[in-house]
Length: 462
Image (cartoon, rainbow, N blue to C red; front, side, top):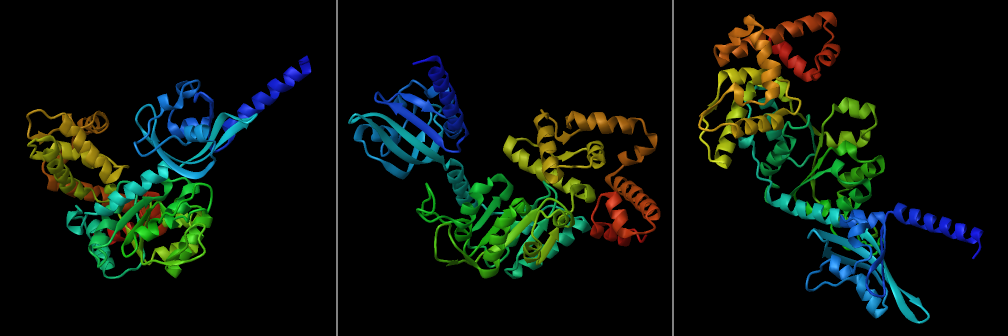
């Protein structure tokens, strides 16, 4: 072999390695002794392994199988049989379960089997999602009685949601992350005549686009490589409720199919030729302002109008700070039970610090704050300011110490509420004056919804 032929061979070998690592399927090959000779990047991702853990080692020394399972790769090497679209569940060297759909075939040279090659498609994530949804069906336990909050802004949303239990109309829940959108969805389901059927929740942003369609509508065996007969979320939720969280994260084509399924009350599994009737109530959620979502074309207008028959706007915690006290007491009760503690309340000084925070993480952030504070308590029965996260003490306590006029907030919770209300009223009046009483512009400048500003105008008789 001359120099040019050698360089060409090296070049082709490098090209072959690069191609193997770019394809979106796992490739695993073993030699006649069962030792791995090819193991591409995608296979490493599927099996959560490094090439050094597998290459040059006997496949049966690295992976383990249940009693009723065997290695399709070793089976091809021993029998010479080709297998297509075979589902296999096995375990890597860390004991983690992996599920793949495999096409496996032997390599025959001069009448002898010299190698075996497996091309695998990962379905582990899809399997886990299906298992999680089965569990979610059994754990839709929240009712309206368990939703904490007595501020007028919040109780009005609860009343609107209760009215929505009487029908099967679609519901759109608008609210920032951590405001409790799923609690409302579960409460609507459990307060309706569908409460005895399934409640299934799915975050649309958590699943890759390539899997989302089959997850929603199901698949028919043979529809594509690795496809098996599997019901989608619509079929699983038949007779009940399907919650689609962050609905605006779906791509436009899938939104169109979703709209058809909702309007026609039928779905068609991928690869099937027959439609199936389904009776599913859809509750959808979004984290952003619907006006912005529509303006940026993140959701189809026809789908938005179909979903928003009933629209609930859950106010963020910064717009209902009087709910901080009852929510804090609820979380204290929860973690007393979990931690075997006997904390009775949170001090007024600590409450004053919590009131100054804007709570970008909303109720979820408040819960984590209370949980963190209780981890610092030893024998005390009251959460004090020094139990709160250091970010509260540094940012808010220092400002209190430097501002004598704020001492009124330390007297009673009632004087705190009055002080906050007075500050809020004056600031709203100032912004309204700056915008010539244009409610839309003022709401945008204040960072609250138009409805929330109108409520405050009525509340303070501005």
